[in-house]
Image: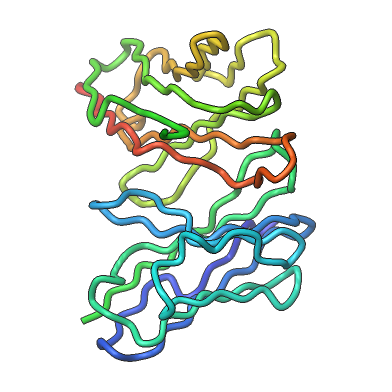
Length: 114
Length: 118
């Protein structure tokens, strides 16, 4: 099993540009989570999907952030326009939709907005 | 109220000694899972151990054990015989399971940074 695959691993972009982060969850998993990690705020849940449907997006910072899951094997997190304060490591994780199963994390995307 | 509380921002332990990382949780759901993750300096999140709310025995995985005290709502991670490679950030997490209108997201604590001293 290849695990959760995120791309790109690193992204450097200029302020104002659009950034798209991609995630391929583990096959068969029906929950997908997007997290942001910074030194100041720790690990924050941005949004999560069950069966490709967004369940809770209350963690999305503002309208500049959007996430989609068009099918069970692909999700995107888009930031438009990007700002320097968006610089962070963004993790995607997937799991089965039951309480006794762990989340499997991707390697993360380190985003730097200059 | 915080769902997961980790009160130790940083901990030090001598190599080969045991160390306990604290975690308390808050939920009214009778069915939940508790998880510990390790994040080394390389950044990946590594799942370590799981404890279910109905489990009668404390979970163990190699040198990791979870000291589950349900009445106190604590789920402390015990690492025995610490190794230099155990130096990392450790996160406690909870996932609720059964109440209507509760989501199944993972709630993470703020983490404890563990340093193993040679």
